[in-house]
Length: 245
Image (cartoon, rainbow, N blue to C red; front, side, top):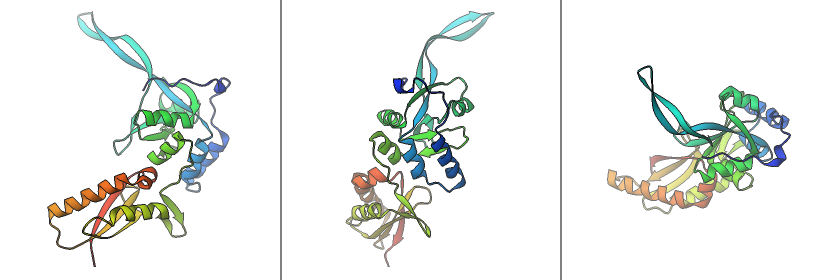
């Protein structure tokens, strides 16, 4: 990604972190503040996007009998990080100090977090990662990035209850509506995932062979991908298979 140009409203920015964001991040670290509140504050906050020098051309020169690669032309650009699941994430920072803890050679560009999210979406980078070198690191999931980019309030797919997290009712309904009509699916429901954000638990007719199972799963996946509520609200899905009783 080429560099993001700062806006004039940050001309007097001293590079320090937003005090309310710092408070929420501390609560997120201790488990008392939900990610939803952090994202909501980000929507009204300036972040710093790191710009790094990129070598576009190199030349080979001889020195003391050795061939050396030297920079011939360089430009500044924004880089992506790779999340543990392989998706690309735009790093953003709450302060200059947090950025310098990550890369001292990075040049900070102040922008609205919403604008940073829009830039990530334009590059097809799914995630934002806030302060990757700490003091508190937050991975902003894809639906939250999309909500920030569109200036909308993020509604997480998982909501807290007295017994822990559960799948939001609208999301659970959309998943059931997408999966249940597929032939050989007896029941379908959603619950918090183990390796993904949300698990789709399918009760299937007994006796399916491998080809039949693959067909059912392919159809379920296609219908889930086409369901707008699922696409807008769920960061990642896993399928679990059970037999109908």
